[in-house]
Image (cartoon, rainbow, N blue to C red; front, side):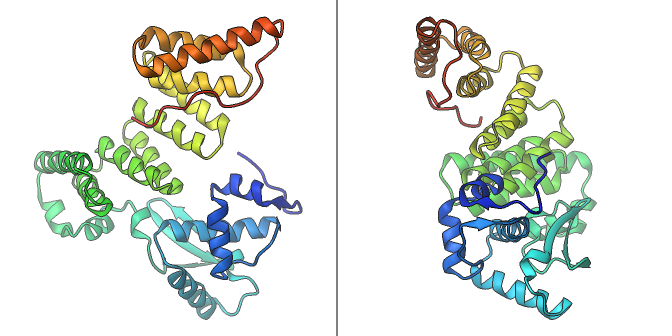
Length: 316
């Protein structure tokens, strides 16, 4: 776990990398006067930004976020920097807001992060009594139907909300529907809502620990967040579960190559080409493998320089 120094200062680039937010998002918050314009940040600033990120990931407007901060002030008294003293934390399956050391009920927007069956039922307009009254087999069958419906909606290019509802209904009916959870994670991944994507991928692994695809998708998520070590660990786990997982070998080779770990990169490029010798991606793999061989020859066996070669492969 990365430990941050309370006295240290962080640049905008470091803040973006640590929190997984873009420069445009930072500037937008500054324009909306949710945060002051600054070039250096301290730990308290990171906490404030982390809170804003979580609120923004709940699809709240700037006006709504301002109302939340105003509500915090009214409930716990005037704080010098309310966002810096506000935390959103998980307690089991519930989301709790803590301000100044005092717990509060979530002010708004908590349902997307709440995995409680009753709350999910409310979110997808299912009466909880209907969910509980059905037999497990009947719920599983209906969950599978909603999962298939979600797949059909995705193939048809349906709006995000319709696809989201279908997969949420599957999870509400069958809390062990790991496939629906992974697809929910991927929906949020494509919208660059990293925290929610990670939550759904990890929930899938809670109910199905040997789910290689969930580990692979987490690897893609951490790669996008520029957490290379975490991405490598997830790709490695996917391969441990499924040694012939070609896409995981491809992305792992690319990350090793970027890290200057030439021998490991070569090994995984070779495995990938054995598993997938004819696709367009194989041509890229051969090019990168040849690049590493030429670099080794020219530099007398020194490690290859860091830098991205071909494109990584997206989630499955």
